[in-house]
Length: 168
Image (cartoon, rainbow, N blue to C red; front, side, top):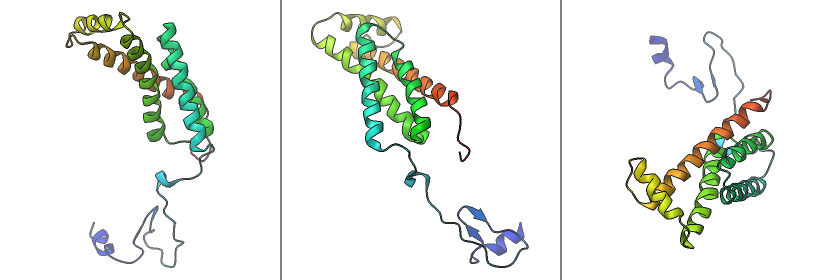
């Protein structure tokens, strides 16, 4: 413990990426520090990811208008599999998949509600039955949240089914 205090402030004692080995004297190679968010080794550019997320949103929208409630899960699995090629970190991909699922369900629900379809009344009733405030917005947000949970679970399953690279 006291040896640690003696090392404080000494040049080369603490380097980012590698600690200096105790007892060995001599020059050590400097490890260049590059934060993970600044990595540029993605295999796909951002435009490809945005097109993929747009395609996933359209897939979820089509599924929502067809009554296929499981389409956010399918789109999440596809996004998780595509991330094996794209190599984006999970802290970037998970929020993107969440926005994809939320937009994919929210847009069709609002569209039919604005055109006088009975989904607003159904959403109010579903919210009231669930013990939430009996507003249509509450039912729609509950539905969108369920879609986001499905998409994130599908994304993690897609990541789990794809093999990991040796450098990961």
